[in-house]
Length: 211
Image (cartoon, rainbow, N blue to C red; front, side):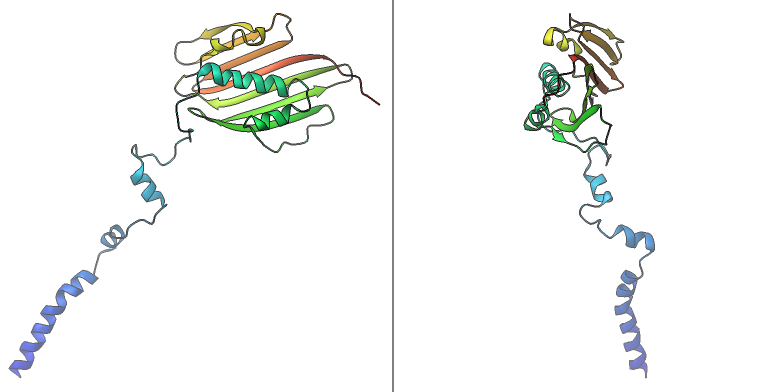
């Protein structure tokens, strides 16, 4: 009988560590489970600054201010200039077209986006308005420039543009330029890192329709 009691005590002693390991508290149990790959917890651990949501910026050296402004100028003046083949040229230049809503009989619209190193995605919206006697062109680009890389002075001279800037000294800049014949007006601003550039064109008389 004594031997049986002693054997029972030994078995209980051997089982105790197993029972202790099995009776984890809820907090301990949750912290012992690794987060699956791709989960929010894993992503936050991998982010050096602790942020899991940051604007995507295309890698590589930023496109030079004059080069990116020239790209905007060329595409915007082409698409809003009334040439029906301009949208194909924009697509070939790297702009990815987006669907647009029906805007009525007088306006044709092109919308697209393109990634630029150092800035991320740039949104473009352009239109040509054709009325019985005249045509109007419009184009706008929107993108982020949080490091103040854009120098709007680089617009001066493009296509004969002449204008001036109002630099507030805090990163916020406003400017307007026009051509000597006053057929193009360009308005640009950077406010709290967000850039908007607008091209307004007077295209002249509506082309005569060919029968």
